[in-house]
Length: 374
Length: 96
Image 1 (cartoon, chains in turn red, brown):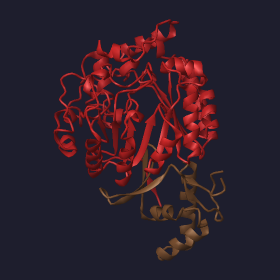
Image 2 (cartoon, rainbow over the protein chains, first blue to last red):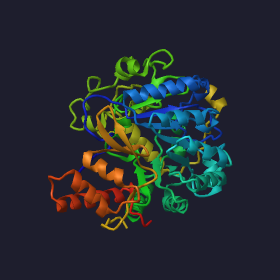
Image 3 (cartoon, helix red, strand yellow):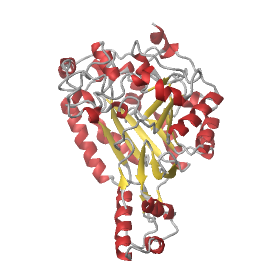
Image 4 (tube, helix red, strand yellow):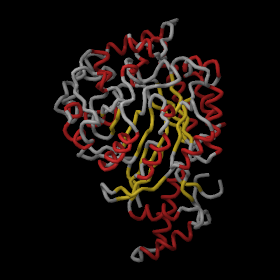
């Protein structure tokens, strides 16, 4: 009687999407300094109506998708969220709401549960109101705790997500204690990935190796102590790894992201790479895009790989790392991910790490529509 | 707290949901951002994890269904599987 590894780890030749990331809107009341939405988010409106999204869910499920992440921006800003949850559940999709918790009432959350919501992931930026609100750019901490308690009161499973960076890494023990006090089923300790708004804020956010190792040890001990009660995930930042992460489990292998304007993407930042052509779900079926869109094909498989990836033993493990990171750091999306210690451009990462050792006092750049339109 | 004994009445954790994967004709156990592929017997066990049946009853049911296998072997497999699932927080033992 065996269970095999999760689909994201299973070895299989043919690309099959398991997860649809539905970015319902880029709008958000929070202004987090590490937001993963593109810098020009304000130029992309909500292009898909309720019927469009329901069709996207249906076609995704037919392609093999079993997991649905409803995210944004802030998905609660969609007035049709209840209808979308109901539609997703009728397709038997495991539906996860990824939210800041704002704006929400307990009644609306209860209604979302009635419509079939499976899990709620609430972001909490830090362990005190002052520190959390500073990163979010909005007074929101107390309300988030209240929302997290509603989730549990209503009998829904709760994931707490905390993005880690140099200001809160030393408090990981307190983050874990907070998640325990909320009776979270799962705690995601996600080190900042330096894309989107995190890249211009990198000097303020990048931790030292010492901070990171301390937090990792704390998380490891908590994982053992809480086994079976609370799942503790610690997502390693690739700036301090020897090899890059298997970004999205490989380009166009396991994930479909649909952006608010309807662009179908292999990851949430792929449309920030110039020169790639992506299709809109309003123009073509998901199957046609998955099978034959130029953008999805661009970095599938190994043919695009330069050396040292092309002859590397790890190429089927990490798929060459993150294409967006390669582009945003080197200007070439087909370069080896600079996070890899074997990459010709790895010096860019080493320089950033050196910078983290110097005390810095850089102003945080908040995610705002005004800055986005510049 | 993860070890499972024959008297426990295991039930699926609230975050986990069993789903038939028609694309690959198999069961998957889904939970946030993850999924486990289950073989037929593992799926049988999960379907009986409703909080009503003891592990003993689950073993009886499987023994009846898979008559070619000795009961002891089935019991051992069920206990090992349920313990592993409890460690992952996907099964509750019924007393927590």
